Image (cartoon, rainbow, N blue to C red; front, side, top):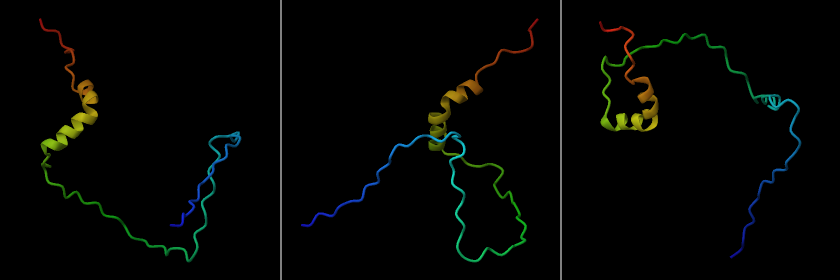
Length: 84
């Protein structure tokens, strides 16, 4: 069997630029004809039902990822009214 050599990319550490936000290369120019100007208007429709069904599995996922946040948001807050 002949071994095939794999090309490896070698990254050489270089000095950082003075302005760390000024390192992006300008976008490359696209080859070919520019797109035609299409003057269409977008229409957004809200066709969701009034009640969106949610499964137990979806609730469990949200509780697993956002449980700590939900605890803070929905914690019992002391009432601003004083009972007399």
